[in-house]
Length: 372
Image (tube, rainbow, N blue to C red):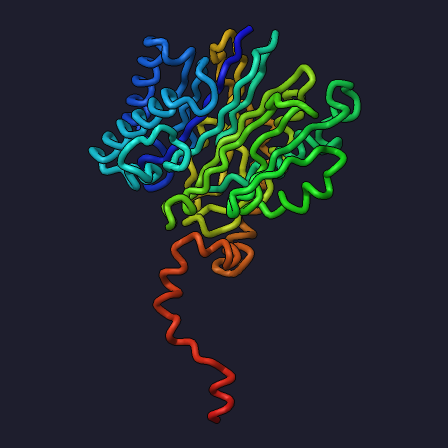
């Protein structure tokens, strides 16, 4: 069987209202263009979804990862949606498009990209997780639990096809370097880095000793590409499931206990990643809290059968309540760390512009003591 490629490309090209949602006219334009691409044979299948103010294009095709044709299609869709956003005076129209022209690949141009190419199995359950008001490192803990933690994933203990573990590729998004750690042998080495989620991000998970991709994330850091704060990265995670890979329940289980992530209001705060239904994917309180939705698909000859709303189930109600309690606690700290991000992370927000205005107010204490 020939390989199929799943590409998920997302961008914020205009918020309704503020940074909360996507206007229906923008979604309609994206759906119209993706449907036309399917009819023209560019795509095998395609859907439009989103979380918060981010439009996500979920596409299957036979053109492989980093296809110029597919990336150009996504770019054109986002440009068309930007035109709609500008006409309706949506907030931040086109903010994730950092260039005026397409240069052959959408990576580095603003939109987030997660793609994987694989041979479709007899049954191919696959998840697309979309997060809003946070950054790519938000996936580090869930991926660790899914693929490395036997307390989360029973298959690591009792499934002979998973018992040897997985290989995880980690990217240093500051120095633009990468390294592969083998689990479970190098778990402690892995944890040294992925706990620093604003710098070290899990990009790929592979079957042990192979190049077969089991999971992939978007690792684009918008502020670093733009050289200024233009919004959070709002990342994507794709996970394949079952038949020698983590079971559906094992993939979802990490989201039952919300963890703290960077982002939230103005990209400058720390808050809980709240699992939500697709209908509740519209942040509000303090422009948040950060949230995640889970779209479940069965692939059938490249066709996207779904999505099924995987995190909207009532079994995640308690997780949502925990997240709201965490939000109450974190908000009570206001501008104090760790509710506000550490200074090194605030360097990628608008704070330096304020600090610059005050720099001449500071005087040298040693000099003052010598002259007193």
